[in-house]
Length: 216
Image (cartoon, rainbow, N blue to C red; front, side, top):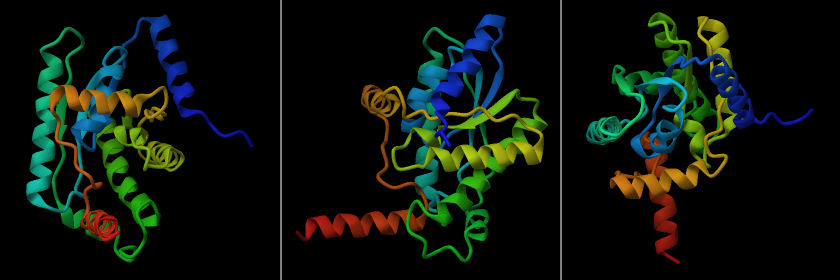
């Protein structure tokens, strides 16, 4: 079975929209400003984009508020430039929802089943909001990360779409040097780039990795 190329699938959608002169309403789940940077630069050319900042996995209050403020600052910077305006919706911040979702998977390694449960929590909520508010599509910035499995993210997104009646837009934003561009944009806008995904488990693993390197 051939491996799906989600980047090409997204390009095919865009080509069809452009032929029809359409700019669909897209709800873009965003995990942080650095990951959003390239995604927004690219997508605003073809969609009316609203960012959905829903990340109860960020389990430290100060870290959460730092990231959401950076997201809003980035959107404000983009909206001062020529192009389609970007809106933002901030989802409910309840870390207890994350801990409930991953209960029993606390000891999984980063990138494993605990992460899938986290993806499900965030993408199902994005799909529900997209359906309730009449968006044409939803997707996520998470596929820009080289540490995130695009196959898993797209599978979860498609399941969420089927169960909610929303429409999922496939993506693999790391392709076509998207991740490289996000680093460039982060430097250009002076964005805060965290070195862990967000949850206390990923932070603990990152601290272990840094300590192991420093002890060599």
